Image 1 (cartoon, helix red, strand yellow):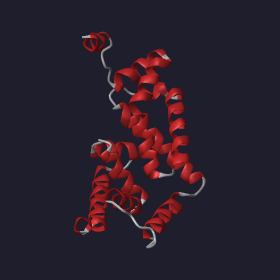
Image 2 (image 1 turned 90 degrees about the vertical axis):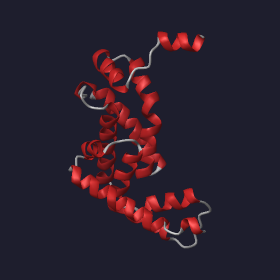
Image 3 (image 1 turned 120 degrees about the vertical axis):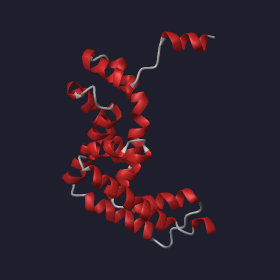
Image 4 (image 1 turned 60 degrees about the horizontal axis):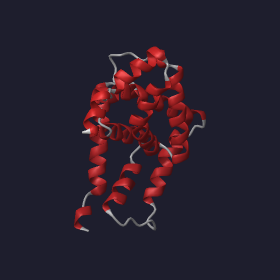
Length: 185
């Protein structure tokens, strides 16, 4: 009974509601709830596009940007899409700053093409295949796995709808090709 009463007294608010309350009041409790709801997804996305150290750094910078730019949030947008847009821009800026976007793709390909590196299970094969995709294909695929629609991915990446559809199609095709025959092992 206590759980039901507690739920009734403190109803769950959507991210959009929390952001609007944070935007209006600046109260840390609303930001804290947003962080609790989205921290893991954001960090996972950034790790899939970079390394753990850079992902943690960009995650922190993203939340600082949310604090700094809260007045730019528009209520008709999904908060998670707005958050990921900020994170993506910060990550791309970091890559450009160090001219690492090309290096990142080459590094992933080298790591997955290494014949001495054995993978023991399906998840490892999938991770290796995913890392072998170029940045933009991997990004579109991972954003879709995070639950974003093609339209939302286009918004996050500032790309055309058809471009995202193509990236998703190519990513899935490459993953299928790379993982072909895996079930036979």
